[in-house]
Length: 161
Image 1 (cartoon, rainbow, N blue to C red):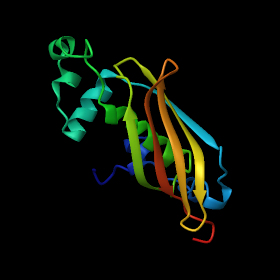
Image 2: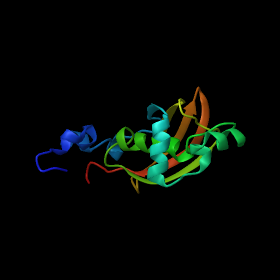
Image 3: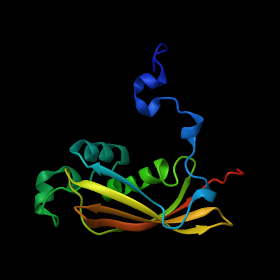
Image 4: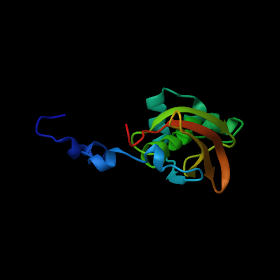
C-alpha cells in the first residue's frame, strides 16, 4: 500500500471499525431458536475467484464442455463456496464478531450454479453454558430447496471475557 494511501481508501473491508462493531452477541444473550439469514447470488466471478483462492480447479466448475458432459449437465459452483456463506452468517450476524468457528458438518444435497441465489439460515439449536459453545443448525437453499444442510459449533465470548 502506498504511504499516502489509507486502509479505508481500499474499500469497506479495510475501513476502521468502531468498538461496537467488534463484537456480536455475548454468550449470555443467545437463546435457543434465534436465527439469522444471509442471501447471495453466485456469480461467474465468485466461482473463478473461489477456484483461484482455494486451488480447486476441477473442470466441473470451470469448463462448460466438461460440465455439459458430466453428471450435473452443466458447470456447478464449488460446494464449499456455498458453504462459506454459513461462515459469513457466523462472522457477521449470529453470533457475530468475536465468535470462533470450531466445527461444521455438511451434507451437500443439490448443485448450485452461477446465477442461483443462495439463502442461508442459521438457527441456535443448543447452548453449552460450561464451555460457552453454541450448536447451530445450518441450511443453504436455492428456490426454497435445500442445497446444503448441517450443523456448526461456535465458541461465543461471554460478557466477563
